[in-house]
Image (spheres, rainbow, N blue to C red):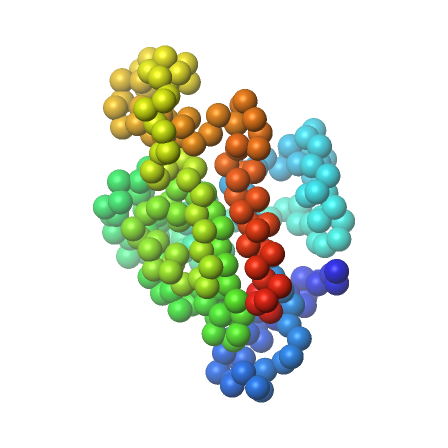
Length: 236
């Protein structure tokens, strides 16, 4: 497999905007395929390639083949604001024009957690207009289930969500009250909504019994299957 440098990646992204207005026949015949992996809440001091204590051979191999940024700081912290920055390539902080959401998702009452309004400006849509096949696989509870991201989900050629921390639980009734109490301190157990969320979470998981059932394992298995589809969709 060929290795793309950061400069080539940036040039490809800049060229995509200009290419969007060109007919397919006029576009370059060979363009790089792009894969973006977003992992939530990873401590740098626990990743091997950053000198951490955990063994992360695959991430380390990726770091050796590319560029590793040791002092990178997001301009908008937290789950949804950070993803909006990534998808739009622009600052979202300070959170001007913020409005309270009605999705009932945790954090939705916090400024900066609204959906993406200007869908045509996401980098995936810019690439799609220039002939790229796009896909998105996630278990992120906000991106995958919130109404505010419905149009975002519909913007991809292939979208796949994994039931993780939110969404319909397959067998929540099989999670006993005793098991919910095991994972929640008494003062938090009194919160009914939190009990429901934890019950759903436990019913999706049980990965402490089998790591293959973890949300991460499910997402990456599904993403690997989607990557197999890209053989007939170039570039992706």
